[in-house]
Amino acid sequence: MDFRQIRYALAVAKVRSFTNAATRLNISQSAVSEQVKLLEDEIGFPLFRRTPRGIEVTERGRSFLYEAERVVSDVMSLSDTARRLRGEPSDTLTIGMGSGMAQIFMPRLFGDLNTILPGVRLEVFTAPTKSIFDDLHEERLDAGIAIESDPDRVPAGLVFDRLTEADMVLIAPPKHPLARGRKPVDVGRLVAEPIVMSELTVGYGQVVLSLFTDLGIRPNILTVADNIETMKVIVQSGTGIAIVPRPCAHNEVALGALKVLPIVPKRSVALSLFRRRQPLSRRKEGYLAALTGALKD
Image (cartoon, rainbow, N blue to C red; front, side, top):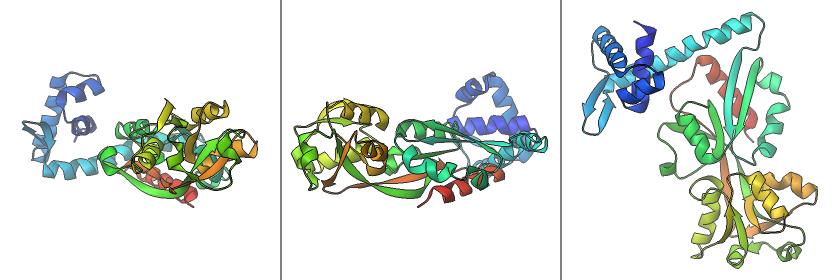
């Protein structure tokens, strides 16, 4: 059985198209079709069938390719094993993280990184929730830390493990009139306040927008930013207010740059580790388990 044939079949299964698989592999469509056909002839059953909606994986093909995915991951990790035997850093684990989450999770991880992930180089990318989901789906990330969203807004094939929950709070400049109060701020009172928002259809933005729509009102959106760091800077300028998870503003509050106020109705968000349903190499599965354990409350 040719390793190349398996790689080509997995590419077709991922994009549900021989043409798009050929583009991703940078080879001709005929070469992909030929190698997949040779693989099907050897295993004795078809992996794919053509339907009016395009290419679909057969039932036996799904089981075969599920196991093939693990085998390919193990083979690809052999180069990491060789580097480890040469005394070089062995593996790389690539994770995405929603903006504002570093204050929550990085101290937990980097406080004892060599014990949690010995010999592993960790690559961390900060991105909006939707980008993390897309990058996971396209296999550009091994895992991603993001807000739990409505299931229909999460790409098929992703699963998650909840890490922690955080209360949503109002952040405002220290001299803002709202910052002088001591009671929780009624979201209904914010209808005229210019508010800085994040993504409106997924992640923090979806949670914040639902706070207003649940009350039958529309927020006065000043601007939409794709990350919480930018949102906080805008609020610090005195231009508007924002609603974010409490831990995301801890540093700015400690420095006196922002004021944090609880809100009513109270709302919290769940922060979770997302990954693809398909198994990674056994080594990386172990790394993800260690990472999850370190980041959980």
